[in-house]
Image (cartoon, rainbow, N blue to C red):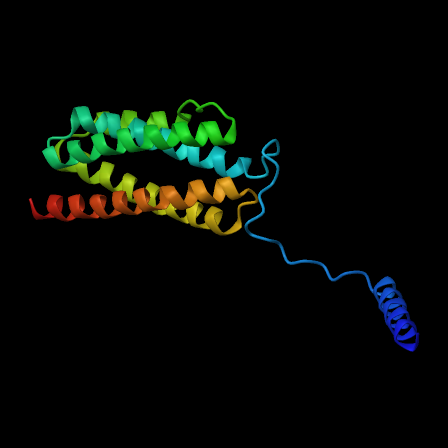
Amino acid sequence: MKRFLYIALALTLAGISSAQYPPAPRAPDTAVAQPSGSNADIGFYQQALAGGVREILLSRQAMSQSASAGVRTLASTMVEDHTTLDRELAEAGKLSEPPPSAADRKEVADLQRMSGALFDSTYLAAMERDHERAITLFNETMLHAHELSTRDLATKALDTLHHHLTDIEIQQHRSAGD
């Protein structure tokens, strides 16, 4: 009987102590995703899609205008890979692909007036800058996105973006050597 009273007393005291102190807040669980209906990461999707549209637009111009077979091949890869990525981003973010911005259309018009090495170096510099920005955006998203699916997509795309940046730098060195 005494044993029963000790257990009852211990349980009562445990109940009192937990009532006085609410449970400690849990650290955010990085494996817990937001409900699929909410899209707390919409800004990422919008920025990533706009960047992809820009890279496709500039790369299509390079495919038709570059004098370098290496730059044309790179541009073709950019169009193919970013078209695929943009489809995935649009679907995941429940967005449609935005039209090219006025600044992007102006940049294409400026590129159209160039030729040869000037065209190639300007295009490659734009691709390098765009990919550095994209890598920063996707890294930040990989670490801080609200939805697990957004983090997964950013992580998956980073490998491709890094490969692109490496290929861009290779083409820049080859063009500098010509």
